[in-house]
Length: 208
Ligand code: B1M
Image (tube, rainbow, N blue to C red):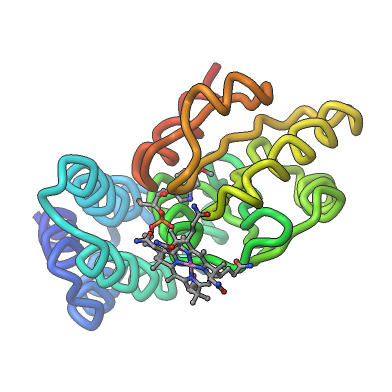
C-alpha cells in the first residue's frame, strides 16, 4: 500500500510527500529495495511510458524526477547499508562543440529512474573525456546527445574512440537531428528518439 502511495505521489511530482512516505515506509520496516523498485522506480517507469506516448510532457517529467530525487535522498543511505547495487553505470554527455543540455538531462533522469547510476560529463564533451569517465566509473553504457547538425558528426568520434580504447561499453545516441540511419552509419550500439526510450534501450543493451 505505501509503495503504491509513493508511486502515485512521485507521478504527481509531490517531492515533500514522497520524502515523508519513503521515511514512513523505512520506519515501518519495509525493505529499501522494495521501496525503490515498487515505489520510486515504478512511478518513474510509468511517467516514462506516458512521456513516450505524449500523455505527459517535459515539465511533468522534470517535476516527477525532482520528486524521485527527494525520495532517493532519504532512501540512498538505506540502500547502501543493505548492499543494493545499481543496475549498471551510464556515462552521459552532450557531444563536443554542442552546448544544449535539456534533452541530455532528461535522459539522465530517465536512466536514474530505470535504476542506473549516472555520471554526467556535462556539455561540449570531447571523445577522450567520455572514455576517461567510462573507465574511471566502470560504465557499461555511454549516452551521447547532439542537437546540431554541425555537431552530430562528432558522435562518430566517440564511437571510434570507444572501439579504439577496447573498453566494453555500448554507445547510444540521440537528439533532435539524430536518426536510426545515422546510428547505423556510424556504428553506434543504438539510437533512441526520446529520453524514456533511451533508458529502455540502455536496459536492453545491458541485459544482452
Ligand atoms: Co539551440 N538550436 N542553438 N539553443 N536550440 C536548436 C537545436 C535549433 C533546432 C533551433 C532552430 O534553429 N530552429 C538549431 C539547430 C539547427 C540545426 O543544427 N539543424 C539551434 C541553433 C542553431 C543554436 C545555435 C547555433 C544558435 C546560435 O548561437 N546562432 C547555438 C549553438 C550553441 C552550441 O551548442 N554550440 C544554440 C544555442 C542554444 C541555447 C544556449 C540558447 C539553448 C540551449 C540551452 C540548454 O540546452 N541549456 C538553445 C535551445 C533551448 C534550443 C531549442 C529551442 C530547444 C532545444 C531543447 O532543449 N529542446 C532548439 C529548437 C528546438 O528543438 N525546438 C534549438 C527540448 C529537449 C527536451 O529536446 O534536446 O531534442 P531535445 O531532447 C529530446 C530528444 O532529442 C531526445 O530526448 C529528448 C526528449 O525526451 N534526446 C535523446 C536528446 N538527447 C538524447 C540522447 C539519447 C537519446 C535521446 O541517447 C543518449
